[in-house]
Length: 167
Image (spheres, rainbow, N blue to C red):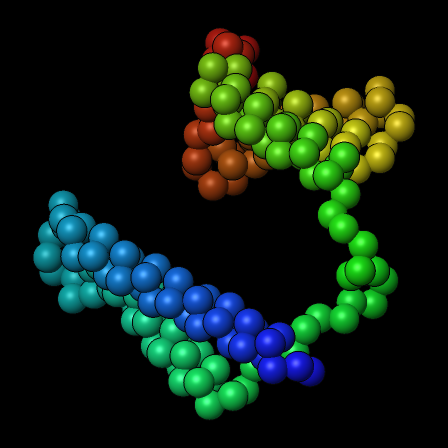
C-alpha cells in the first residue's frame, strides 16, 4: 500500500471519528433539552437512553481516533460477488432515490397504503421485476399488511391520507 493511499485512508477514518463525535455532542445537547412531563418517581426517566447513546458515540469516536492515530487502519472490503472496480449503476440508483422521494412527498396526502404501494412497486421494478401485475399485488399486500401491522400490533397509526374513511 502506498503512502498516499495510507494518508488518505487515515484522513477519511479521522473524519468519520469526528463525525461520530459531532453526532454524540448533538445527541447530548438534544437530550439535555428534553422536558419530563410525567411523575418524577422513576429515577431513570426518559433522558437516560439519549445520554447513554451520546456517551457511547463520544467514547467510540475517541477510541476510533486513537486507533487511527496509532496506525491501525481498516482493511478495505474485497467483496465476494461484487466487482468493486465497476462504477455504480445509476440507472438503478436514481429511480430508487426518485421513488423514495415520491414516497416522502405523498405519504401525508395520499397515506401510507398508497405511497407505500408506489414505493414497493417502484423499488421492485427498478431492481428488475418484469411481472408488473404480480409486483403491484404484492406491493399492495405489503403496504396494507404493514399499515395494519403497525396499527394493530404496535398501536402506531400510520397516515391514512385520502383513504382515511375506508381503512
